[in-house]
Length: 449
Ligand code: FES
Image (tube, rainbow, N blue to C red; front, side):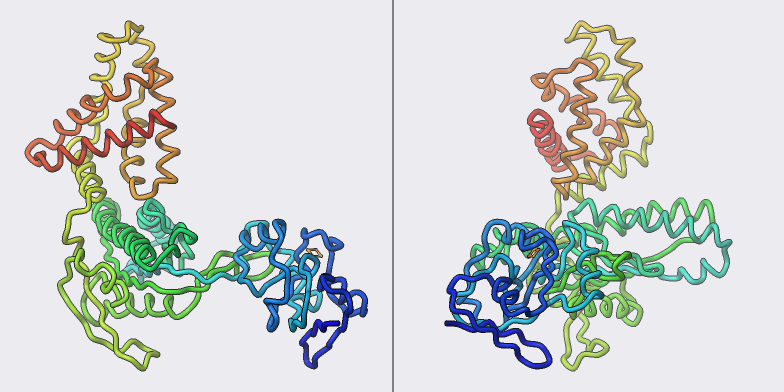
C-alpha cells in the first residue's frame, strides 16, 4: 500500500494497493480531477504534474515522455501522470487546474519551451541619441531607419550563434546560449571552455556591430545628415528561458537577474562615457584575451554588492574571423565591383580547362549575386549552422556552370588573387595565410556538402 498525495489548498492523500499503478490511474480510481485529454497516450501533456516529494519512488521516464520532456525543457520534477508509475509514497501538485491553465498549455506549440534554466550570455544594446532623430524626422523615416538599424545590428548576433529575444523601443535584447548542453556538462574544464567559446562569439558579435555601425552611419549621414552611436552591456549567467505571453501572442523570452545586470551595464555606459561594458563574470572567464581601457567599480541599481565592469575595446589576440570580415569590408570599400574581376578569371579557367561554351556560362554568373554570397559566407563564419546553407548555394552555382567537385580546390588561388588585388597595400603574409586557410576550409565544406 502506498499513497499518492495531491497537494492543493489542502492535501488529498489517495491510497493504492497496486504498486506500479500510474499516477493518473490512482487519481481516476479516486475520482480526483486530473486533466487527461488524450486519454493517457502521452500526446496532450495536460496530465503533467510537479513532484514535490518521492521522485525516487517513481518509474524513470519512458521514451515517449522523455522525448516530450527534452523538447519542452522540463526539469526532472515535471512528469506525465499517465506515463509515471508509483512504487512508494509521493506528493505532487497538479499543473493544470482549470480551463485557463488548460488554454495556456494547449496554446503551446510542439517546440514550445515551458521553462528551462540555462547558462547564457545576455546582450543589451541601445541607440544613443535616437530620440533626437525621432523628434527631427518624419514618422516614415523613423520607422525606416529603425528597421534598417535593427537589421544591421541583428546580423552579427545571428551570424555568431546568438538569438534575438526582442526589440525594445530602440534597443535589442539578445542572448547566446551554451550550444551543446549535454556535451558541456561532461566535466568542469569542458564547461569552462564552452562558456569561453560562447562568450567569445558574443564579444565578436558586439565588435562586428560597431563595424556595421560605421557603414550604417556613412549611409545615414548621406541620406539624413544624422549619425548614431550605440551602447552595449554584456553579462553571463543562468537565465530562465521559455515561451511567455498571452496564449495567442507568445514569444521566447529570457528572464532573471543575469538579464537585469546586462541591462544595467548597458545603462551604466551613459555615466561612464563608454560604449561597451562587460561584467566581471565575463572578464573572469576571458579577460586575458580582451583589450580593455577602463575598469569601473560600481554598485548597480537594485544591487547591494559592488561589481566590476570593464570597458572593452576589442580582442587582444587577433581573431581570424574578425580579421577576415574586416578585410572583406575593405575590399568592398576599395572596389564594390570586385566580384567581376573574380568571375572574369573564373571564365578563363573554364575556357582553358573545361572545354565549355563560356558565352552560356557568363550569362549564368551575376557578379552582384556572387559578391553577396561570398559576403554572406564570410559573415556567417561564426555560425556553422547557417554557413552550411550558403555553402550549398555556392556548390550549386559551381555545378550549374559545369565545375565538378575535384576542380573546386583549383578555384582557391583564383579567389585569393582577386581579394589580394583589391586590398593592395593592406595585403600581408598574415592576411594571406588567414584567407588561404578560411577559403580552403570552406572549399572542403563545399566538396562535402
Ligand atoms: S493524458 Fe495526455 S499526456 Fe497524459
